[in-house]
Length: 226
Image 1 (cartoon, rainbow, N blue to C red):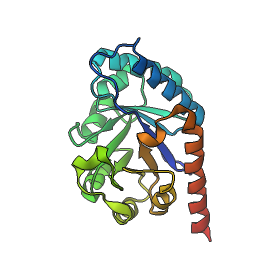
Image 2: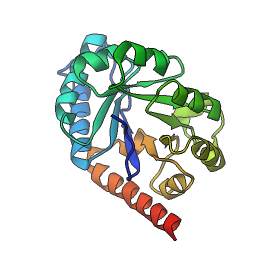
Image 3: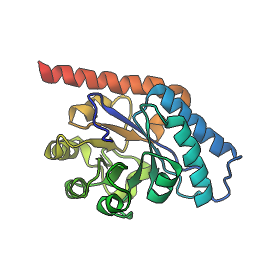
């Protein structure tokens, strides 16, 4: 399944607050499932379970229970890095990083039906991910954000615009410093949608955030048609 759509994509990334001591009865585990449920109700396009410190058995349990919530809905569930757990637990796909296996390897192992996203930080990386069989890439950081400082200075709207146009119509989602205020500019630069942690961090705000993204996308489409 491809994430391509006429509406801009919304990609919720979980905040990684779980630890090695987290269990299915822990508060943070329950909170994540509540966030997934709210995301489904808000029709968020994609969810990435980015819980890097969870023990594999607990990550499997989280993914399986999240997949029960997303199954049969418009929301697709991905697991950070662990393609094996994604497939075993019934998720829709996997999100790969620079340290992960390549999209081509995942494709050979798990076939064409699994959804594969890849984090990229340059046009070269995004082009390689597309060639390797990724369904979409996340590109950033676009704006300054503490969580992405290790990936170098922000790429800015100019870098986003150049990469999005070079890859078009391949889906590229912008990441890094995304706020309600800069979403119109991000979509106007050619991004297919936005990916974020903090923007999607509060369950009660998700419907409003998704509506904002879709409205901004509609404005951009109308301007292109003028």
